[in-house]
Length: 205
Image (cartoon, rainbow, N blue to C red; front, side):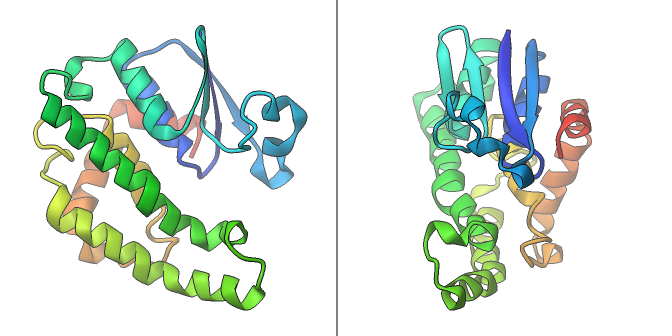
């Protein structure tokens, strides 16, 4: 059986949603970051990065959201979840999730994880002040150019959708005026209406 490690308010929610979506048999362990459980030896042995998610499989341990989403979908889900029927669609799905991981999530991380980049208190404050602008910019690009609707890539629900939903759940805390992003908010609501999303949120939020 799979075992996934997550934390409340973290990007790991996306992987838990997908596990529910494909009806995988899994065990969930929720770490308390406020108590630095991610830095304890037991978890460091699983993921020395000290981050979530981490997924223990029969073949070994996987970390990083794009990799875990891809693995879960290919092992338990339909081809449409990853666009396996078309190399171009498969690549577009990886392109979108790579953007979320490398740009959008990093922009968000400046609010609470600024010490990854600087210890200067003035710089840290400047990073926090920039969050509403930087997050609005990246989400505006998704709203206008990437989100096809009703799902990220059109009619087919893919591994991009729980990933985007999880990031959208942070927007108000990041100071983004979500009223200016109606298509993203429609997607968010559609995700929220899915039983898999509700099942995941009951365990981790």
